[in-house]
Length: 120
Image (cartoon, rainbow, N blue to C red):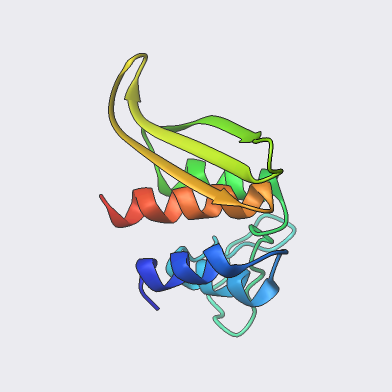
């Protein structure tokens, strides 16, 4: 699935979706690590973070896959739609800004992450 196809799917969501979490995880594979801290190489057991449900998980994803970008804003407008804004650059000299909007804040952030990553 391409970034644009996944963005379109995210834009249709009204609630978190584990299937979409897995699709995002396949684009950005999570680190394979045991609870004791040791690495493993098995591909048949991967825990995909719930990035469409958890703002913390989506923020962690942004930090991992978009070095040099910052989450500038996550907020809600009068229609109760959530918006996320991420920026690349420093201080006020931003070279790129990406936005996402959705009924769930984590989904809005995922949309912005995918837009930013696809445009790199």
